Length: 69
Image 1 (cartoon, helix red, strand yellow):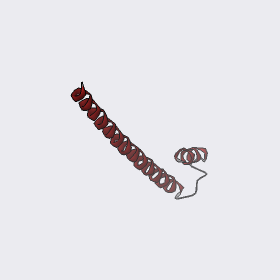
Image 2 (tube, rainbow, N blue to C red):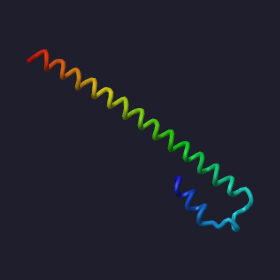
Image 3 (cartoon, one colour):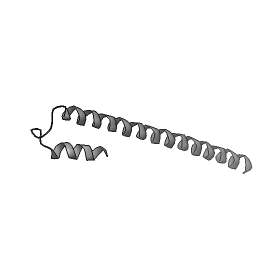
């Protein structure tokens, strides 16, 4: 979706655009970029949490192994 707006903006020459269209495109791109940034932040957060959980599990297994052998 983000790229579709950008492609449309580039396809329509600046002389062909109605007044206010540039503002619409700019705002639309900003909104989409903000949405994408939010999604990426959430993915990073989930990935970090999963990494921490896996790291804790590995450390727990290491402790069990060391105590057992």
